Length: 265
Length: 265
Image (cartoon, rainbow over all chains, first blue to last red; front, top):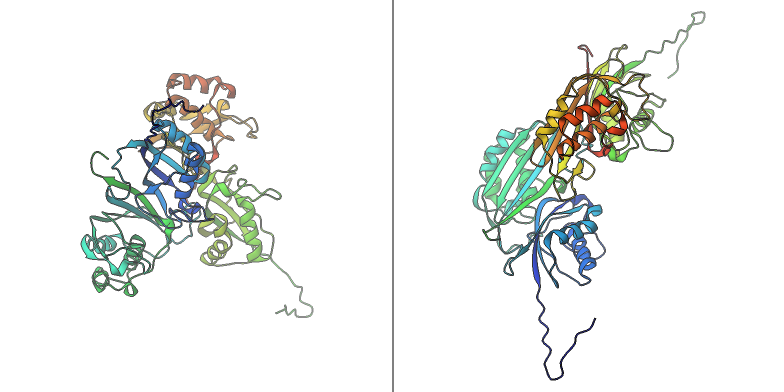
């Protein structure tokens, strides 16, 4: 190969990057979370390694939000820029070739405009938390759900969950390591439904505090098992004290379902 | 302890065994199938080891049916006799103490009458087969379902599945290793339903041939993808030739759902 340069003509190299948006499913039990860490398997690290193999260049991947060790995703979103253009369906196949045996699947891959940002363009995130409510321990769903063996009233939990909708100071459900500037967040949706022995919690908000979903569900289960009334639950929220709330429950029940963007993204 | 024997009175020791019926959930991806094998982890072996630890005696466990390597169960049934009586809920806790980290859970444990036999008393078995129908490979369900990436028409498969109901010579869907005396079986139910990208096959019969469900679904997918019509499918069944039928598909999509017994068992 080599570039022919006419003598006297200045050589101008313009790097034209292509931005891609990907939607990612992963089994969180295989990873130390989303964010890249030295010497630990992470989802971001796995995707960056695959891109390095495909493009023979270091490429940084930006996710719509971090997930902790053990947390799963059905629809995590990320973007990255590549030094050369590739047809999205070919890039998806190439990525999945490297990722599939690691517990990661790129379920969609498309070109994005240069102003698309997986984190800053997102207008909402949705999470699901799964609880299996039965006396026997979990075999098939051991790393897919929380096992809750006490009888649990989903109606009382749904009533308590309604308290969470709207704008609140969520300090009672905020991890001490949380780096958000403010504990004030706006929850758009909060539902609790049962299908047989499976209880499903769904939450949607522009953004969440660290451990917020696991802490909210940990406290809702206090209501479900009859230890607290929905009124106690509201008092816990209003206390803004983490020590008054329930435990931070298992990451294995938590699923990052999707991030939503304004139309055009 | 020790037994006091009055001189001159003959000592009569009567071993009174208690029979138990258990219902078992397991993650088949951890095991070389149900049936005990030397030097390989099996579900029967795991339960027999747990019983040995609890009763300090060898106890044989009899399942309602064998499952192959990789096949899961939500409701396998088994029975066994113990040399001493134990409260069923205590026995269930003790078994789960040993089994839970191995991917096995005893979801029910009860005393059974001496004539109860998990295999011979069963009047029907039900299996489910799960297919995820999408282009992207599976991350979360990699060992829980078959990945089928071609578009798939569940209506055509349901039509073909109806052909299977009733009494037929199922040689076309019988494994060459099958030890059943006859290839004639009676299928009571066969349904195909879709929920989003998940296609669910359900089959109920007094008994099945070896690999019968995986072979039937392998052929139904030939109809779903448009390679065969439901008429071709019927001709394959009627040919009684294994070589004319579709492939034996992955064990990871197969779930032993339950065994049914006459009332009283």
